[in-house]
Amino acid sequence: MDLLIKDIDLIPVDGRDDVIESTNIYIEGDTIVHIGDLKKDIKVDKIIDGSNKVAMPGFINSHTHIGMSLLRNYADDLPLHDWLTKRIWPVEAKLRAEDVYWGSLLSMVEMIQSGTTSFCDMYFFMDEVGKGLENSGMRGVLTRGLIEDDDKDKKLMETRELYKRWNGRADGRIKVMVAPHAPYTCSPSYLEDIMELAEELDAGIHIHLSETKKEVEDSFKAYGKSPIEHVYDIGLFKRPTIAAHCVHVDDKDMEILKENGVSPVNNPGSNLKLASGFSPVDKMLKRGINVALGTDGPSSNNSLNMLREIYLAATVNKAVNLDAVSISAITAIKMATINGARALLWGEEIGSVEIGKKADIILIDMDKAHLYPRHNMVSAVAYSAQAPDVDTVIIDGNIVMEDREIKTLDVERIIFEGERVAKDLISR
Image (cartoon, rainbow, N blue to C red; front, side, top):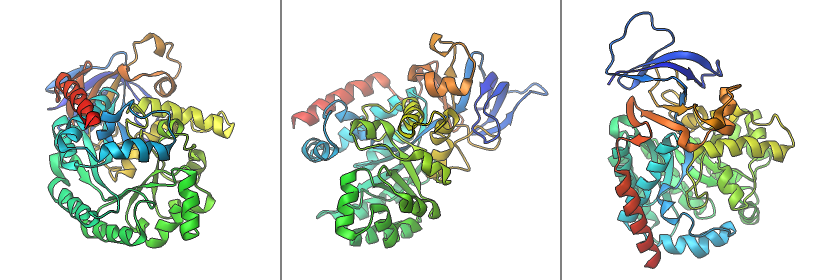
């Protein structure tokens, strides 16, 4: 389908313009081929009226566990260690493939409805996530979480097979990476096995690093160094790495991240709710580190709304740093778009609205009382916009949602099945 979005304001995130007013975006197939005035009539399959709307790149949720939507509002107001060991892991041990399928689809509905077009997921039964991802029309990275136990070799084989089945599938909308859960759940020898697999597959790494003070303290006790220095010394960063959280990091850690091109993923909502602390995002960005943005799972965050994470990334950094100019609105938006694209190794294809890139574009309805007056479009998106303001979602040139109606998924059935399997899971 060839599309023309007419008379639209645009936040391109192209590194040049904050806002381009009253422009046109012409899409041929899956690619953006023209932005600007129309010098002649263009024949297209569909014209979208952009009046009172703003276009921008789709949001990229660079770290999440989408199957955990089944545990939303289930284990709240607990410290991370208790949350994991006493509530989450015991229930996850009872998970079945069907549970993860419906839980993942429930999350995809929520993500599409709030403007997310791409995500990086770490969980179990990843074939089920792949099925949902392919049907939803979204773009995503599948990673099977690897925790060392008696089945550690089997999990490596599952990752290898996952890569063979899914990497590059759905017209290139799906990637597979290798995902050691964390240094505290994977021994150095297991991390080395995981690295060998990543090299074999020529795949990136997705890992949790330095999320809590306890994790960092335990690492110094066990290895005499931080988790980041520990995995660096093992050689993990030889592969492109997405490092979720990076909350408790010092100058030495940040220098390692920068020198090795590691992309930390800030998860402000989850880190705040679990009282893990707050990542020194401003310091990392000023060092030239590519900091992306994510929600973490919908059990620890209770939401997959990237607009809320953009708001938190900007506002909480200001409070933590006692600096009102720390993490501007456009910086937070970049974390949720182009920085995320670079983290997921898609920076040349998505993350900005530019000629030659894939058409992953969202339209936000600005004709809402809470978005007037329109002094600054970027500020309006970062500080005022809400998930229901997302009107249209285009992914790979396909209209996935229009006028708030998702075209690719049966939303009512997904909500019903999600509730059904969630209740059954808790009762097992």
